Image (tube, rainbow, N blue to C red):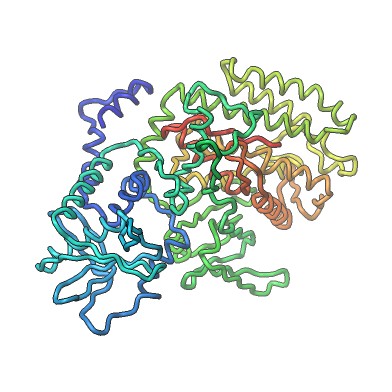
Length: 601
């Protein structure tokens, strides 16, 4: 592991002194910790899965996983004829293992370890019932732990496959124990590495893996197909999707392992007198309606992915505890729409942070990512202006000088020395062209007078700033959920309290997620110049009604789908944010070239 520091020191200019501990010394406690028996099951299933769960501590329980955990209580009957123990915790310093056996039963005068599986069994050449290798090693491990715990010889373990209603019998002999020793040795080897193992060669394993949305195996296979492993390769948004990977003389179907839709919604609390409490596994939101009558709304925790408090709504400690324990982010925004703070229930993922630090302290990596980000943003702005002015001569004529300046910025992205100045030049031309896209029916009060931020001085800029703040909260909670450190960035500098990595990724989505739907809503005359805004000298804010309308517009946009140019999969924009963050992590995790390939059509 010292090689890791040597490499990063060379790129970043930092020097590790003799007084600083090595990576192995820092991680020594974790390396000596006992292995979980279930991690050996993951190891035999897929070494990359083992690395995610055991080394990086990443979990992504799905409905199938929860169903498996409830299997024993819901399906498996108690044995009335023989002594039995359920969910027996066992551990051994000799083997260095800990675990919980599904069931232990007395059969023919001996204890037998039982493992229950929801799926189907493995079949041998004569169609005999066998255990899958991962299930077998798990059962063997429980048997040897039982043997030590009970002080009796355990000669057999059994795996019950409920989909087939059959049982596989496993003999606990010297060969089985040797297999267990080899698995433990391999697990400890992987624990000491800082690089994730490659994706599984057997693609069928990925189809039912709960961590496929984290691993993104199909995206990596597509990248290999396109030869994007070369770091010199630059993304080309005009390049057609390569289609399914070839397989022999035919072509295989490419499964979509990354979920297209988000499973939960965001709960926005706008009323300043609202109070969010807890009742069991439910959040209870209490507020007042226009008649000052008490209104109560109950929201099950499994239905939301984040709780966003706008203004001065109250949240109880019990509610925060519930959100933290269920991985639901809690975020606070000021009345003016500025992101103030946020929490997350995700534990710190040390390995991911170390890789991110190593990647983003490398100057070449930062420059490559910055250029790709600027290229993606400017090209998206250009495409949007061209699309919005298509077929409208006067609008296209008004946009033409600005389009030329944006094109000039785009041509210089990969050759100029300052991406920041190019992005600024393109943004200035883009915002100068935006008023041309507003229809003649839009009232003068809704038209922008340039770009003003701190504070916004007209209604259009107030809407822009509020939408950007909501985008920041969406990107921030996704970045934390993915396991990235928001403070370590490649483009924005830490000049303000805003996490620079969040600002980086926001650049990909500002036009797509907010500017396009906002201009559409303004052209539809969706905003009331009096009802939706609060005017004070020198600044304009959104009223309570305006905030509700903006939140609704933003959340509806998150639910719209877009086909990703790399994967060819149609995703909601909410999922697209998560996908781009996971592709960003791959830039320093062994599969570069995938980030920032999304463009507006």
